[in-house]
Length: 412
Image (tube, rainbow, N blue to C red; front, side):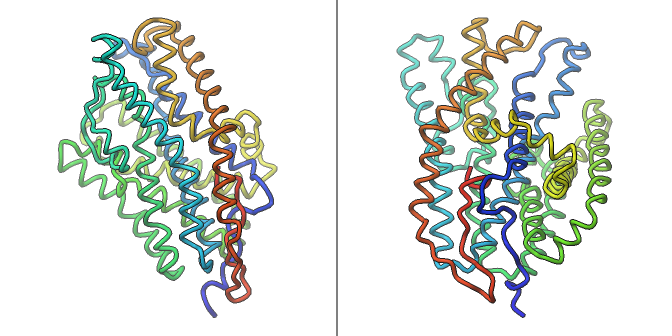
């Protein structure tokens, strides 16, 4: 029997949006906002700075994005492996989803940088760029180690885009692998990536001065979380594996607790600066974070009546998830704007007055992202689907292999 016959539908249906997935995406961007909007500055051991140790956990929101992306994109590609327009459909839809807002934001930064000297030397200095803009246009910014700490405008405008480079590299490789490889070999490759990535992080971190940055930013160093998502997509589309998951959800609950406790231990080691543990934390914490979110994804999708699934369906999280792409791109810049409007300085969370900055930054982000969704993103998503809606469904061993119209939880 051909392997394709052992695969059922994609992880998501064409019937409409899956609210839990929108909610998880909303949770991911909420964690990122908490992390980036509340970075306290003060004496090293003050309670105010210790508050930052808690908000720092929000960096894990990016890890959740990676796991979700692997799961959703893996599901799309699995469901369309036999399509005659497999590559065309995928890349046209990805182009309309990712590129317009991304390149518009880059162009706006380029225009602002060009105009800054005309506003005076102060703003010319603020908009001084240290990382070449062409790296962003080619999605190579995550391989640059030029720090942005003193390139204020560039840091706030463009810093979040490193993870979009990782995503684009994933989009270039994964369609080919899923089209050409058997499911069995694909699973072996995914498992190899999951196992090897933390050791790549460990070696790079120990061997080079720039290793810690590379371990967090380089695509090969973050491949394990994307691979986890794709692996779950394969399991979800395989009836036997899906039944096993459904029958053993309790295992995933217990694993979540175990992985969560391990993550907290890593954070304690990091904050306490325990000798010889820095590389260990950098190398392996990301692996446990990815596993934690994989278990969370399983629980939320399998146990619809659970409290976790109910939380994922909160309207606030679902709405935030819907506009999360634009929110992610612009949120730091909106914080910078809010800080200059209210306190006439760069954002520094030194006291509770800066809660006003965070609130205004969030409101500006929400407003711009809603406008972007309504007038740019959603129309372009629909256009991408209209351009590929003629895709014919092929049948491979009685399995429909044409890509379903997932203009919902995946496309957005």
